[in-house]
Length: 294
Length: 338
Image 1 (tube, chains in turn cyan, yellow):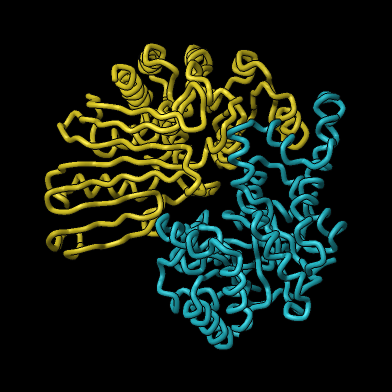
Image 2 (image 1 turned 90 degrees about the vertical axis):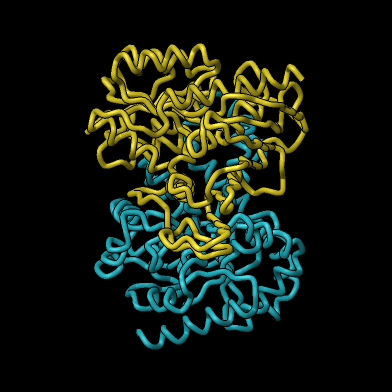
């Protein structure tokens, strides 16, 4: 199922809705106040749609379930609208692990009584079933998107990079095949270590993967360095999504977008913004520079 | 290549394991934990050897270094055993359950010239490094007051269960969460030597504190306040900051930004009168592998470099971790007296 979908040039992100700001805790608090109500999120999504963005790339945050309800309720309005789920919403699990340990967290989040029998039965019984647990967790996270077009399903960077560091590439491969089999979707991987991830994915036979990573003029969160990233984009086969193109807001937006548009092999650019002015400005820059560098 | 193992596979241990596993100069060979489920996952999907007994792991694997991320109460026996076997040690924070234990461990590491480090990762955050540099350059003049704060959503409902809710095992906000801030104050501004008053508050926990508010005096006579609350839902994740008031200006610093207020222009630092904001984008330490924050990789990279060069580093030594332990004990004693 190679290259099943052509991703839109611009993907709209959701960090701003959930108080995720990589360069300012204060801004993130302000965002958390602004987007307290789902209406505020929908309003901003509508502004993005009016600017021509039709793909919303979002975490499996509890509140996205409400947004999905709203989208499902109005099929006419959201006719061509696509969502790219990114799972898991890591803080939910991370806080649970700190509080209840790994076993406790699994018991809390794996649906049904699968795990109950698992822990009663002991380790020998479950040893073959870790990938089934993963599949159950994916299904649990995907429930909220039922009936919505989700052609690409992403693994969040904290998990991608954890598995990458631990050398558990087989699990990344299993994610890739499961979302294809069960959801007829392509797997995408978010990472802060794009060159290393690409190398490892190729080793397990995943060719031309969708990889979303920080790509910006400042070299921010580009592990191994900006030059290495540029060289991978020029010489290797991948479908790159650039995120954090504005370096979290610390780079001049026009220069930042020009830099990303000038690179080869960038299929999509992911960005999020709260205000109409910022959304239309960024979309304008991308469209203009995109024409210039095609 | 250095041979390495990780003992204790909770959230921090697993994160360390990934960073150690991705390090180009390290051969990651073994892990140890009491959870058979976690060990089984490692057995099935990685090439590392798995152990449920750290003594067996250390005896068998001929390691150059270990990363120890067990619950705090096990730090003492595990660190001690590793040091006795001449293995370099990176130990998670807080360093030890009691300063008596910590003193002994720091002595052994020093006597045997083994590289030692404690996981106070904030000292590897670019903005806090910049703050320390600016204070060293005296940009805000004589310091009159500081505030060290941390807030986050660790215990947000009334239920106990893990070692974190048991004071005898190093649980409680002061011993666990606040140790980060105490250590940061200690390394960036000065060592706390006197506690002038403390309030501990249990919000949801029973038997341990969820918040600590304490007045500290440092070895350079600067005084200020520690404000830490781990039961604060308004934060998505732990947020740690220092605010320092000087006679010539003020600096606010957290892991993402540094905001400087100057009463007059400072030409040497190119800081204009009024507010200047700088972001982590400018100060992040470069790393080859990223997981959850540059600081987590940067601290392991630093430790590995020190082991390779056979030279103890100046950041986050056992001795510094031990001082933080002593301050925590002083704060808890002070709270009892009130």
